[in-house]
Length: 131
Length: 153
Image (cartoon, rainbow over all chains, first blue to last red; front, side, top):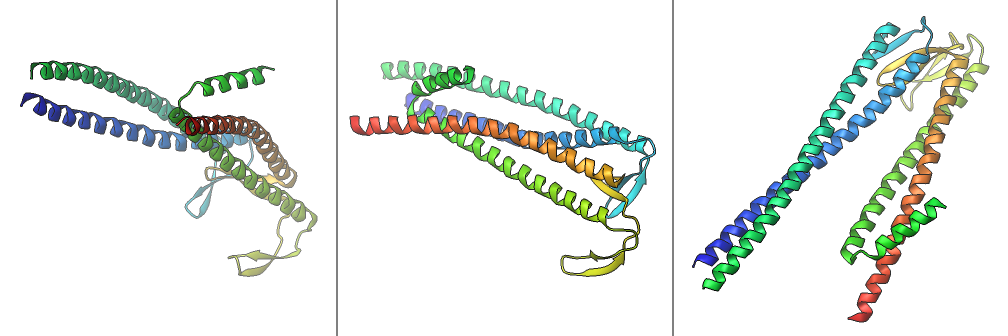
């Protein structure tokens, strides 16, 4: 019978759509985690930069590399932290864009599947009439 | 004034929600409250650590050059040593950077960090109490709705 096969088709389609949706949602959750990590790092780096800015020119700055403290130029340390902040900020902006893109995809998916469902139900109703 | 008005507004919107929606709202609010609570405890521990550092610095500044001290190599192993320089300290400012500071500068650093944490703590307490109010309100309305449902059926 036609309507039973269409129902099966519809079910499969719905399942696929649901899977896609949950995958997208998982992506967003993961993205959120990473973003949280980066935001924390950004905050820490900003604190460090503030601290470095407060120092006098001749202050001794050390960088912890593994278990060793290595003496570093204040200017170099400053440049390093600035670079890091720049990089992390750029990454955060990128992730924000990524999130918006994913969101829009989800919205489109939901709208699309809603419309599809309605059309299919309509088709089904017609099929039943005929049957 | 504004906050009480917005509070009434949220109550109104909560009243209009279905039981499922209310449940979701309550869950969300509870989760946020827990998260904020965790942050508060984290800030608390950080503050106590800095306070310990401050007392340690104060202690150290009272010692004179060449006084005997025991340095912990592990949690249970100490070796005797003499104090070489009681006027300079190495401060960990985060992300692997250490800065050599004089004693007053080190104390100043600790104090600054503590006051920063305190102000953050106060802000967070405010946010957390607001969230908690929302969660409680949602819980009360949810209970009322559930009771209503139970009595009507």
